[in-house]
Image (cartoon, rainbow, N blue to C red; front, top):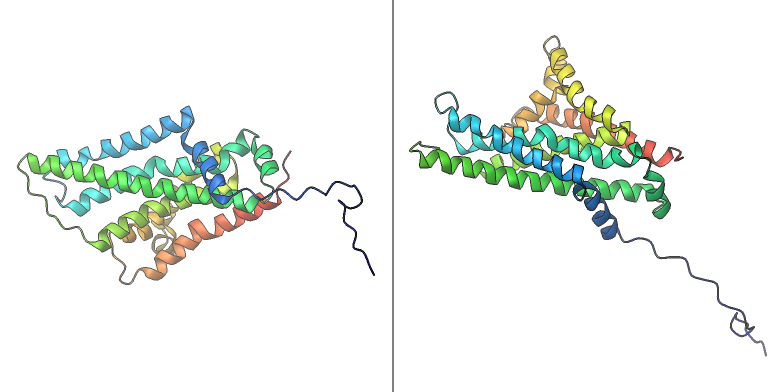
Length: 259
């Protein structure tokens, strides 16, 4: 007869089990707190709200020079949101590198790709929340214009709303991609303003750049819900501004030494 032996039968303590992985939902909550629960983050989000509300005065105060339609009001709100909202996403990706606290994050969660995914999820939530806020501001501006006796065309459709939300999210994702790639707050923020402006200037001399790379042209088609004949250019621009830098940034994040 054979007798099986176990640590308990020999009077030995059982080996401790490996710790359970951190739930992804907890990672998302932590990254959400980093993005919103600091004084600097709250000030930046307040500036996003103020810039969005402020730019809505343009169609309200310029009834003769601005097409008075709900869709156009919504597009103005999108432009206001995308001035600073991508900066929030950039800081979410770069803040820990700039403050050298990333070692703590990656010590608690060594699988760095999960941390990046949590930051990406929070950025998408912020972008969606920003789009909802912009929609409410646009609706308030339309109500103000209507109350003044002005006729504002109610021309919203599912396509217009989808294009508006997608435009906001693309700009946020472009910020995420730059932050992941450059991993420096100052450099990434400067690049987020300088690169699109530089490409727009190059677009004046190159049809290829203006039609396929310049986000002010390609992504404006998304905002205008003008997809006919522009889908290849839009997709190429998304790959150029979001997919390639984000993939390179993920690789750099996974491989970069943390000291």
